[in-house]
Amino acid sequence: MKTKKIILLLACILMGNIALMAQNSMSFGIRAGVNFQNINGKDAQGDQLDNTIVPGFNAGVNIEIPVGTDIYFQPGLLFSTKGAKSTETILLQEVTSKLSISYIELPLNIVFKPLLGTGHMLLGFGPYVGYGITGKYKIEGGNLSYDQDVKFKNEVSNAEALDTDIFYMKALDAGANFIIGYEMASMLSFQLNAQLGLINIYPKYTGIEDTPSWKNTGFGLSLGYRF
Image (cartoon, rainbow, N blue to C red):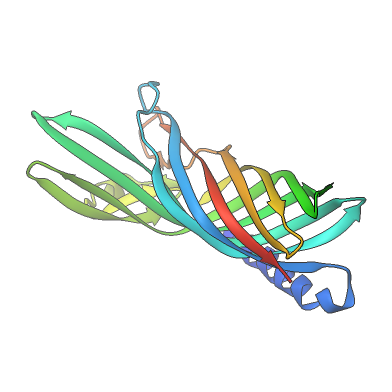
């Protein structure tokens, strides 16, 4: 609950800054694109996860605050979908499981924008914080077909673990952003961004010592426009 309040406060601060743009040298931007996400890490036995990439999307806003020559601080507010897919053989049947989670994210990037041709090259990096708001876990294959709603908890009790309609995950995600792209003179831009999750999003189950380590990773392509 404290984490949710902190993210809400940061979002309010960001929106307040946008309202003050007319009185400063800031600029406002919108951006949307496609994600290619995965979940990497280890299972409870310490073996590497064998997941594959799933497509998703991202959309949101940001502001750009000049902090030096061609250097800008670029906080943003995004809606982003992430997840992973895996396939395994169970009782001679190929079964596919897919996890999809929607996040509200606060990227806090430093962007270097040197002049290149008639526009500007974009090179950026910085941390991000995300908070899961909804999700689905689906299993299909052979005679199996069912969905589970994702519920966000840091620790799952024995009684909660018995609920077969719920798939538990941690809500908080955080990691590092990397950006490369180009902004044209028309203020239209395109960029490739990559994310490296740095915290475990798999919850702790009461009485179980060996907890899997799941971390969001991925990259995306997006288009943006600055006002």
